[in-house]
Length: 139
Image (cartoon, rainbow, N blue to C red; front, side, top):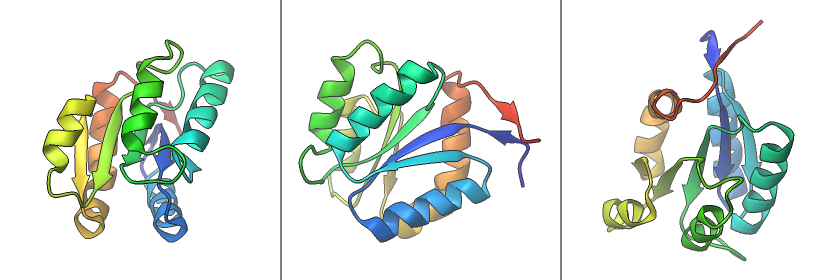
């Protein structure tokens, strides 16, 4: 188990994928919150930031979701100064993922779940470090 952890908000509408990502991140030492769509994620992100301004340090964002999709979530996030500075990494199987993520200001992309599972832990750790996220040692 790694000694350094960070906080991650997983925004994914598929419950199995969401839980798999949460467990993988937990195994790698991250504290992961999960939301089923952008509306729930925005509420969670705002709530967490009010209670602990340093958390979460990254949002893993799916693009296609009910109620509030990835693009709509990002617009609402950027419009709220409380949560605007939390970086996002976009997860999707979209053929134009790189362009869409770039347009959203994403710091990383994870294309397709098999590939994403292999690189998620390393990418998340690197993104958290680049974002200047606070890190704590597991006790």
